[in-house]
Length: 219
Image 1 (cartoon, one colour):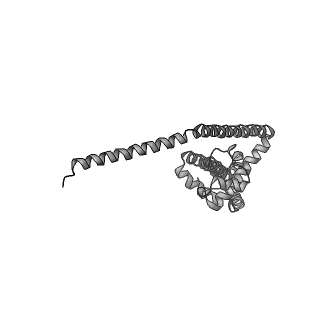
Image 2 (tube, helix red, strand yellow):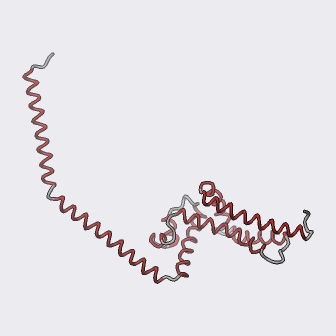
Image 3 (spheres, helix red, strand yellow):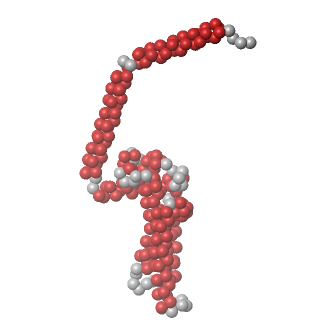
């Protein structure tokens, strides 16, 4: 049935009254809130100023530490971070290890770590480069000798070196496979791996050519 005009008019008046009351209540809440806003703004400004003072103090302290630490100390601390990261990476893997894990292992603050490395990716790349150096450095040392040692002596020495550093708790056997896997997704690391193993190939090729020239292996 059609609603009479009088009832429709009454309903509209009632709705308008409710809306007006709601507006008044909202304005009342705003009026109550307004006196607090300057105080909250002041508290926020004070908090921000305190944070800026803390940052300035930290920067000043860091500058003092930088001035007090000599090159040897800085290198020792950098190596301390890498040693801690290597132990964690060997146990848990690159991507299951957090920055906090490394800090805990190294017993250092975040500020101390970020002086040397801007991210975990940089730590991973440094560990990878050191791991590759463990492989390539002994080969380079052997193949720079004059006269070149025989090929069987080179291989024997390389196997001895691999056994020495490869199977310790944080050794190549635990880190190396992670480096290869990381190189698949990290282009700069992939280039590093390619370059280092090109050096190994060239060094061993030089030994083989010397052996061929001496007549110890066929050409």
